[in-house]
Figure (tube, rainbow, N blue to C red):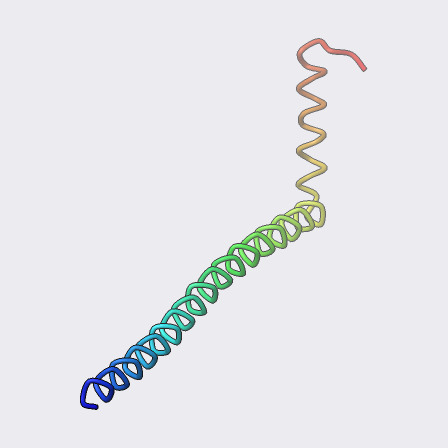
Length: 85
């Protein structure tokens, strides 16, 4: 009778331990997934920000006529080196 009681308690403890381990593993996996998603989101945002900055710089170059001057300078250098259009 005492052996049956010990076996019963042992079985209950095993089940409790198994459940605790499941919960901990689930929480750990959830945290890892959150971290991966956070890193992916940061990278996407970084790329979007870089693209927005490129576009703003391009707009500023055009707005201030710098892009046109650079293009003309390259054309003048090409002509100066003997290349004809």
